[in-house]
Image 1: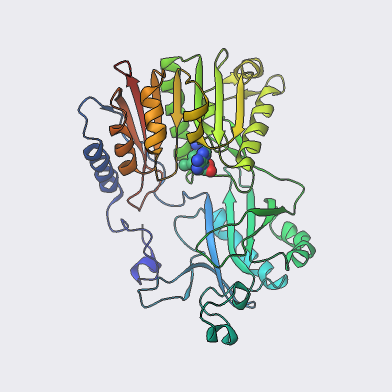
Image 2: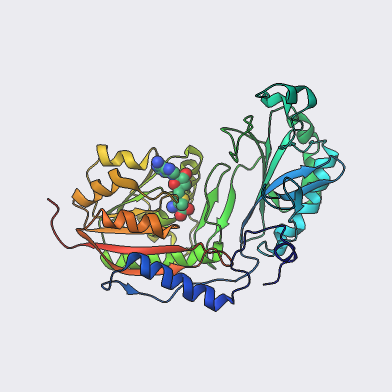
Length: 417
Ligand SMILES: C[S@@+](CC[C@H](N)C(=O)[O-])C[C@H]1O[C@@H](n2cnc3c(N)ncnc32)[C@H](O)[C@@H]1O
């Protein structure tokens, strides 16, 4: 992949751009195999998708002026573009449908007078004080977050410093929906702090629709995605990830499973089956609401519908005992007895000592660990010596970067104690 921003030193995100893609995948495979360093693991060939145009979401920093807003990133503090707004609307990681939305969103910013937030320079008055107040920074619009579904629909979220511009945004909403009819959901996220935090707690949805339907795979499950919910970055590889998880879970055939850090329920719903009790736990209440919507939709499919190879009757039975609850995944270590199989898919920090210890000491016969950080994965596995990794697969969710996803099936070899 060729990138003018990388070549000019404006953006450094794609650190592997100069490495041919097959070499990237081979080196990631060597990296994860060396980190897990376990000859007993049977590795499946890596799962890959397109090497460009694969990102389903864009997190655009908004800079520039009201008349000429810039959507992209701010140049890194150390380099020659320090603090400068860098336009990344043509970034090759975005599919065409995302790229095409950016000029329209930029025009909306101008029309609705959403002044780009100036993250670098407090006003002159504030500069005289040692710790300028948040109000001393100029502007309102911090980020625009855009998510694209496999069916071409969009969710657009405006991260604002305050609610002040919301009325203007509402006024221009019909213009946006006419200019970009594929927009399904528009919301405002209020993030008042001058801090490196992408979004705040308050979300105001401006459209009638509150969730973006994210179909996974050709005839696959359509997961519902509400604002403030996580979704895997690469829909094609996420489809392979969930399919692999389902294949291994079905082979084990547990009567009960937990999906910890379940997000909008991708693993839980792909691994549901008649006669299987599934419990999904996730910290974001909005993600749990999304997962519950998908479950209810699968429970009531119209006669004749086929989803992921199963008909409406099968699905009604499969999701009958699927439950989702908002909460801290590590708290199950205190509260609940273990099911037969536990799926974990934590953030980069991994599951940590407490949850690892609970799994190690539990009655679960299998654990399925999906990780986006093999370093913390290896640390967690070392804490669970009774659970032997038997099978694993690298899934390259993040081409052109050194990041990747890895799925590992663990099987209990010894009774904990
Ligand atoms: C890597 S994402 C996985 C989401 C989901 N499994 C999927 O396939 O999309 C990690 C998820 O963990 C959630 N999370 C973070 N800390 C958590 C905690 N302490 N307890 C429960 N969920 C947590 C995040 O909100 C996020 O949805």
